[in-house]
Length: 211
Ligand SMILES: C[C@@H](N)C(=O)N[C@H](C)C(=O)O
Ligand SMILES: [Zn+2]
Image (tube, rainbow, N blue to C red; front, side):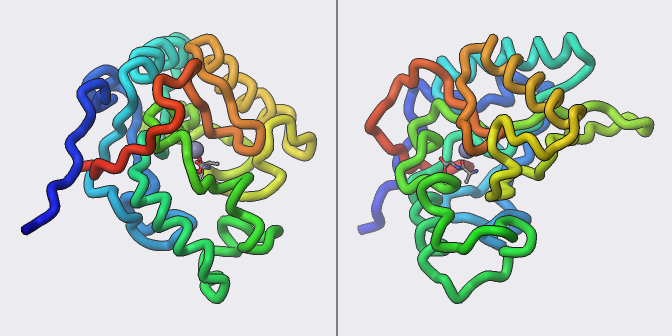
């Protein structure tokens, strides 16, 4: 008999329904990510979060909008099978095809732990990876310059890294302030990674497919 796929938990929300103006660009749905291919468990460009985190994100979007900006989302709930895919990728030290773009200064065997979690808050539904975006002259949203791209696994992505410009530091600070005021805490190693406080689930790792 075919195995049943887990359902979306009742208290998980499709964020686009609450925050329709946010830009959603789920990084692990396509191949433009550190794995270099579509990641297991992502089948749609949808951001799911646990209800409390989703409600809080409404406030973050309002604060961004008040400054003429919008939230630009890279990842939200992450199925455990995606994390398992990351771990398979990380253990294959012969595949370094994305090194130049995503971890130019670190060895691949140093990524799991500080930069990629084996048990991720994303799979508990209260964690989101995001940045801020502004409209360009043509009226298209463009991510602000944060001094390093999303998923650049490198000290330059650490919060408080002193080597980036003042403007880049100010952009990171603005993102952190907006998210902090909405109830999220930044992860010190990655300027884009925020967890809503207190997370509702602390040791449950969900595995429903994003579709
Ligand atoms: C992989 C990166 N986007 C990320 O979210 N890292 C943290 C540590 C995680 O995997 O939870
Ligand atoms: Zn993250």
